[in-house]
Length: 342
Image 1 (cartoon, rainbow, N blue to C red):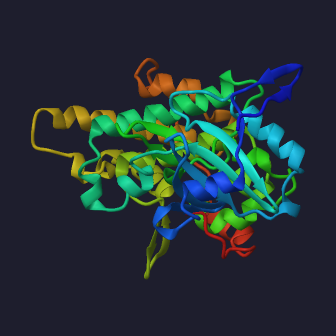
Image 2: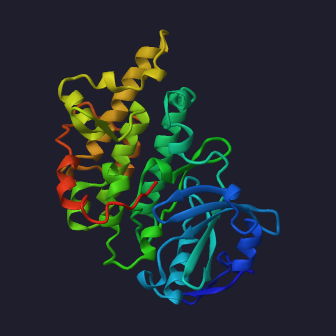
Image 3: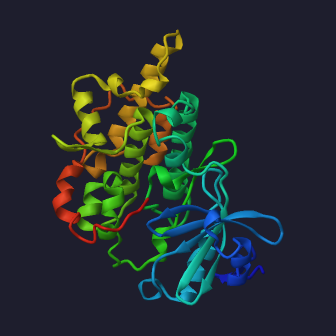
């Protein structure tokens, strides 16, 4: 049933309040075979509504007392239904059942970027350079829309490979684009999520909890490095401990060896190889600009798009050192570190 939500004197008919029975029927009682994902905020199920629409239903795992009130929750979700962009997953509506909240999204046929392409060498072989360009630009455009075009501005707060979903044509769709707005400002989400997404967190956000658009820019920079290199954001070595992708890229940049980080499955012995290497290095430099320690030096997402499309040259741009995430281990990792976000 479609509900009309009063928003500033106007009636919005796009937002839908679903009943629990509708979602239960759509997922066949949330049967395990319909479960398609699990994140820090809850499990996700594939479902089919009575009109035949295939959707993804997220069961939020946050308890009632830690969330905003029911009326405010509905108002915020209704507002998010106005967020329309080709690179964002469409949010249809929500359901409230006791202490549970459910979000209903478009279903993405090819799961997430993390699942489809970044799981190992075999899957990365099908992740062509053209596809990597398309995904990188799509995520950048989605963030530019949220940060600079949408009023009020929206900070995503959890940009990572598992939150970039892929449609039937492998076009990227950023998911959970407003989820941070569902929780009280003083909740300790950062402490509970560090174990799962440490590598994506900007230093100033993880240390102080102060969230800005530049926090998203940092996370995007890490994601961009991950896409181009095919490497995990954190690797563990028994002898040397943890290695962070951002630190590795910075060291290779200073040695003028960024090209050595390009995902080897992309490289071929043909005429296009050198062009690809040049493009890949340029993308990694953009990534390093996004993860600079000084937030004021990080570009806006509209600027990132211009750099990725070569509309703005970065040849003469000075890149300063990134925020070193290893220093954050002592700050946050000991607090509720057992929670996972993937």
